[in-house]
Each structure stands twice: as C-alpha cells, then as structure tokens.
Amino acid sequence: MAHVAAERIAGTLPEARTAAVRELRHPVSGELLDEALVLRFDAPASSTGEDVIELHCHGGRAVVDAVLGAFGEIEGLRQAEPGEFTRRAFENGRIDLTEAEGLADLIEAETESQRRAALALAEGGLRKQIAAWQERLLALSAQAERAIDYDEDDEPVDPILLRDCAALGAELQAWLDRPRAEPLKDGVLVVIAGPPNSGKSSLINAIVGEERAIVTDIPGTTRDHIEVPLSLGGVPIRLTDTAGLRETSDKVEAIGVERAGRLLEAAELLLWLGDPDTAPDHPGVVRVHAKADLPERRAGPDGSLPVSAVTGAGLANLLKEVERLARSVLPTEDAIALNRRQARHLGDAADAVGDAASAHDYVLIAENLRLARAAFDRLTGRAGVEDVLDALFGRFCLGK
Image (cartoon, rainbow, N blue to C red):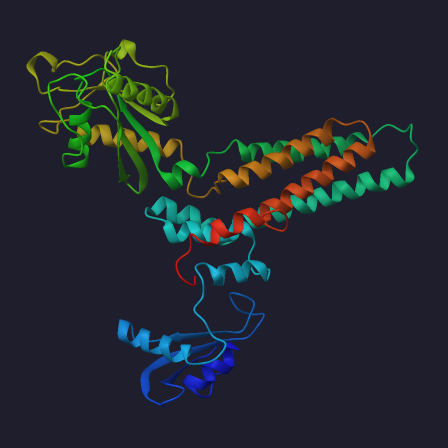
C-alpha cells in the first residue's frame, strides 16, 4: 500500500534503496506541493519489515501539512500512532524489546551519558549478549534432556553440566551487580541535608544560579524538598534540598523532616552541611563546610569542603567532587546498563540457572533451565510482555 500511495503523489518511484528527486503533486487536483527526495524500501529489508517510502521534503510546516493532507485524500491511509513504526519493527522481528527500549531512551536522552547508553541498547548490544546466553542455555538444556532419555535413574549427575550451569549463573549475577540504568536515565539523586540554618537552601540557589529555595534566618523555613535537574559534565543530576533535620512540634515541618529522612536513605550522594561528626553513615557522603565566608567559619574541619554560597568560593571544587562521585555510581560509557524490567527478568533467569546448578536430578535441572529460557523470552519480548508494550511505545513521538 505504501508504494501504491506514493506513486499517486510522486509518480514513478526510484529503485529500492536508491534516492531520487521527484515532484510531489496532489492526487486529485494535480497541484505541485513540493520537489523532494524520495527513497523506497521493499519488505522485508526496511526498518519495519514492511514496504516503506521516505519523502525528504522542504521543512516548512505548510509544505509538510500539504503533503500529509494529500496522503489523507487517498483511501486506506491514516497517520501513524505514537511509536507505531517501532512497534511494527518489533512485531515483525526487526528488533527485540531491549532495542525498542533503547530507542525510547534515545528519544528522551538529555545528556551525553544518556545518549551513549541508549544508543548502545538501541544498536542491539544487550540483544547480542542475550543471544549468546541463550545459545549456552540451549546446549545445557540439550544435555539435561538427553540424560533424561538415556541415562540410568541411579546414575549421578554429570559434574561438568553442574559446573557449566554454575558458571552461566555467576555470569548473569555479575551483570545484575553492575550499576543500573535508573540513575543514568532519571539522574543521580544528590541530596543536600543538615540541621536548620546550615545553609542548604543558599547552597542550592548558588549552584543553580537562581533563587529556587526560600532563604531566611528562621529555622524550619524549608518544609518540603525542592528538586532541581542539572547536568554536570554530561552527567544527569537531581539536586535536592531538604527540610532541616531536627525534632519539631510543628506538624507541617515534621512531615518535611520525615520526607527528608526518606530522601537521605534513597540518595546516591549526600551533601552534609552539619557537624562532620554527626554526618549520617552513608557510602556517598560529602561533608561540606558551608558559610566559609564568615570570619568565624573560615577554618573548616579536616575532610570537609569549604564553600561560600555568598562569594561562590569552593563551589567549583564541590561540583567537581559531585561529578566524580556521580560517575562512580553510573555505568561506564562502554557498559550496557539494565533497566528495572530487564534486571527483573535477568534475575529470574539467574535464579533458575542457579537452582539448576544445585540440583541433583536431571529432571529438575531440565525444568529449571526451561524456566530460565522462559525468562529470557520475557526479557527480549518473545513472550509474556503484552502489559508493557502499550506503555513503552506510547513514550515515542508521533509515528516513530
């Protein structure tokens, strides 16, 4: 249908995968709409696996609207739904679900780190790795099934089979232990915390360069957290100001203090502006000696970074340290990071393979390896993912 419709507007089409300039004319009136570059792709060698036509028009909105309107005059055509091209590529086997997720992340990428990670996924990095795991899994399953058919019931399980299952399970677990995709996609959560009037709101305003938080000398001014997205050297950051940590009888402030406590637990990095000796036991804590411009605070404790929100002194060093630590909780640029859905299914596969490695019966080994194969099918989208498809492809722009 795509080729037939394009011929109504562009006339004779070029050879497949060859570009040519054509006049685009209205199919009813014959009015000239544009002179554009036309490319033709024949199924199955196209992005969706179907016949596809690309029209590279001049970019004015009126031109695009006129061409789309002309196609709308042809019976049987309609505009694509959000994500429909990618969904058709998935349903026709051109890409798997992990590549589709990578494309969605690529469209939404706002930093260089996000772009690189999304591109690695969209280009099939995880798909290729899964294919290698599936090949090993099938070989292990074949060994177990063959043993069920031919070995005696009282014969012990081949230790090499158990060893190979354990090795595959350990490799899957190593992937699960890698830094995850959420901090890279959503931003590393950097929480500014400390007692009231320690300079938290002033610090976040100085970092952002505008007044995002209210600053007064009245303790308890900040009642709820304030979150500001930043990019430090291409690293996505969610910088969050919190209520001052103290005992309070004010119900509203108490809610803010409780929320601050939850944020401290969730934070990847914690900028602590209180007494260094009272800093929470947190693996990513950075002790900040705020208000360092005041005469009585110029000499900060050892191990604390002196910073002045008033003069800006020390801000560059603080941000450099935040960027360094943030990179340490993110996947490296050459590594593929798993998202929550992918990690869940890979975890199911790792558990099943681990159970197979500890079994002492070929039937149990074969069943656990079957469960692992089913988990991989859910991971790639071959089975059991109907509930995630609409949500995923709805993230795409119109058509894409």
